[in-house]
Length: 178
Image 1 (cartoon, one colour):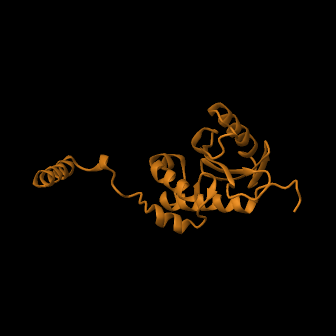
Image 2: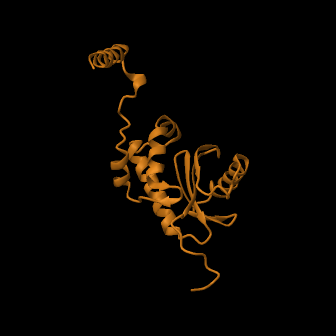
Image 3: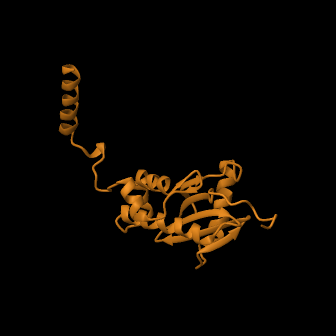
């Protein structure tokens, strides 16, 4: 094997981030702490990528020694970054899995407002696909099954006061009876 080629590694993804159509960060996860250690460096990197890609009609970019695959939808830009030697198809499979999973969670309405309204589900999806830079899953159906997230589930804030009081009464009753 050539001595100049890097050792194979499971840590393929260096960063995942989602920007809006103005280049503002909505979500970001950096998996290599030495890559861009400060928030300022991360935002500068994201700004450089956005400026290079927001008008382009490609799916891949090379910038600052990184391989970046990206996709846009309505008013969002999705990015997955890896090292310069990383296989673009691997990064693209992560990007496609992320996009398809979010499309299912957001009911095909992949836009800024819906993404922000369902941020907990978005974070769960990202965590199921990538852990510490290691790709765990690339099948959107498996991700959705693991996350088991439904956008129509009522969060506590949407329960009526009567439902919350009834639940509290039940819990108090059972704690007293123990």
